[in-house]
Length: 226
Image 1 (cartoon, rainbow, N blue to C red):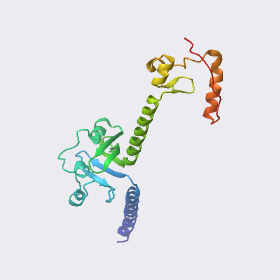
Image 2 (spheres, one colour; image 1 turned 180 degrees about the horizontal axis):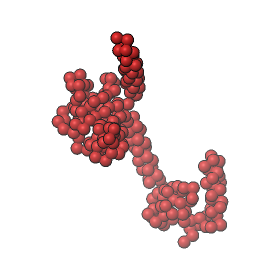
Image 3 (tube, rainbow, N blue to C red; image 1 turned 90 degrees about the vertical axis):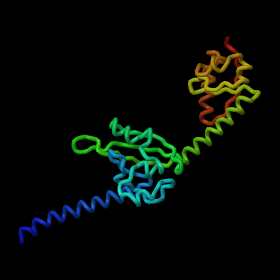
Image 4 (spheres, rainbow, N blue to C red; image 1 turned 135 degrees about the vertical axis):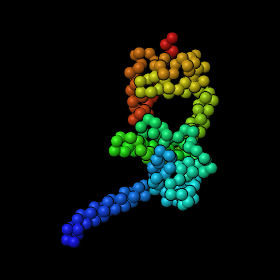
C-alpha cells in the first residue's frame, strides 16, 4: 500500500502539470483576437478559439458537431472543400501559405496557414489563423479612388505638371507637359529630366533636397537640351 501511494504521487503531479499547461495553452489561444483553428487531413476542425464574435460564420455547426468540416463553418452550404484550398496547399507543399479570401458574410479575410508535423516529420494537421481585413481593404479602396481623382485633375490641368525622384528621374509627365516640351510620357518616364543641362543639375539637386526638407526654393529657368 505504501509503495503504491508513492508511485501514484509522481503520476498525480504529472497529470496536474499537464492539465495546467493545457489550460494555459487554451487560455492563450482564446485571448488571441484572430480566429485560430486546426484542421486534420479530412478537413475537420479539431480545435478552434471561436467564441461567437466572428461575424458571418456558421456557429451552429460547432454546437451540433464536435469536429465539423472547415467549409461547413466558413462557407455554409458547401459540401466539399474550396477549389483553391489553402489547407490542401499546405498539406501538398509543407510550406506556410498566406492568402486572401472573400467570405460572403464576413467580408475580406487574410488567412495564414502552416503545417503541423508529427514525431516522424509527416504533416499531420494544418494550423491557421484568420484575420478580418475589411477596414484595410476599405482604406485601400478609398486611397485608390482618391488617387484616381488626383490623376484626373493632373491630366486635365492646362499647366505642365511633372514629378522627379531623388535621382532626377521622371515619375510623372502630364499631357500639358507633352504639349509644352514635345515628348510623350512613354519617352521620358523613368529617365533623367531631359530639359536640365549638366551645368544646372547641381542647382536642381540642391532644390530637390531643400524641398524634401520642407524649405521653399526659387524657380529655375532652363531650356530644352535637344
